[in-house]
Amino acid sequence: LGFRFSGGRVLVRTLWNATLNLPYPVPFDLLGDNAKGWLQSDYLSPSLRLSRGNKGSLFVLVPEPQPDDPELEALLQPPPPPPRRAAAASLTKEPVLICPAQFGTEADYAELVAALEARGHPVGVAPLVFTDWLQILKSIPTPEYWRADLSPDKALPFYYKAIEAGAAALRNEYPGRKVQLLAHSIGGWISRAYLGQLPAEERSATFSALATLGTPHAPPPEGFFRTIDQTRGLLRFVEERYPGAFHPELRYLTVGSRAQRGALPGGGAGLVGGALAYASYLPLGGEGGVEGDGITPLRCAHLDGAEQREVEAYHIAFVPGSGTRLLGCRWYGSPDVVG
Picture 1 (tube, rainbow, N blue to C red):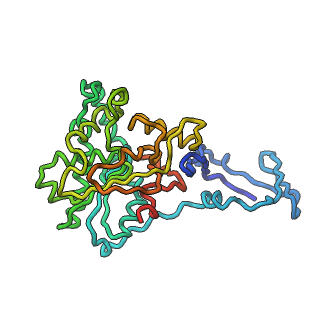
Picture 2: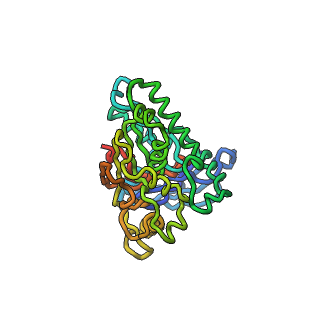
Picture 3: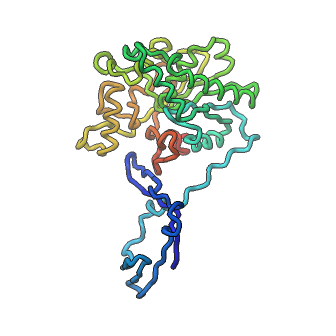
């Protein structure tokens, strides 16, 4: 039996009942004939096979007493084709613009786009690329950064431009319809800031709703955690100026989860998932041993005056901007969560 290696995958069970599917780190295409080989069967019976490889290895193969794990078999199958885009004639509802998480790109949200289009919504994703986020680095040398007093219009203009471009594209393609913003993770509070700085007439003419998925809306509590605020004052800026469901002309929906309780190692909530949640919840809300989606604690995920929903889902099912997904992870964009 002759063969040639062309690629491989490494499956790593990570967190949130999911498996990370990583490429095997060998450039097979560059190996030439070294990627070729053969197996010769020297002995074969119903209970034993002896095979020798082209490099002298001897393989002793016996039938497995149990069939392969169905979950493992499913993971080893070739990935399904990308979801088919819905027919234009079926997209009769208001357009939806997805505002990505940090480092998120359009490709990361293909599953969510397909689920929303199946419900009749034209969908776009704010046109961000991974390297756009490097523009934040310009804020680091400023006094505002070190005082934790940054403002979104100075630190995040690239995200504002992406929302503006995405909304304009949808409005041009579907004239006469307002746009709903669907914002994931920090995209939620950035969208609140963006909406707040718009003139009232433009805001009400362009947008009809803001829905957020796993967004940490509340700034860190006063004291030590406010001092080490990861957003360097950005979230406090938004909450102080545009608290709650601030704009009465917009519908607000906030979605959170209690799928993962934070816990220190040994706390019984899953070693990796619990520890990651604890480390994320603690600086956001001042307590680590609470419930949330694995990144955002539930108590921070809602806005006063908004329609509030809870779902059984984790924060994210992909490594933003990398094309790598957490296989089997049920997140806010999973079709059965979107409904």
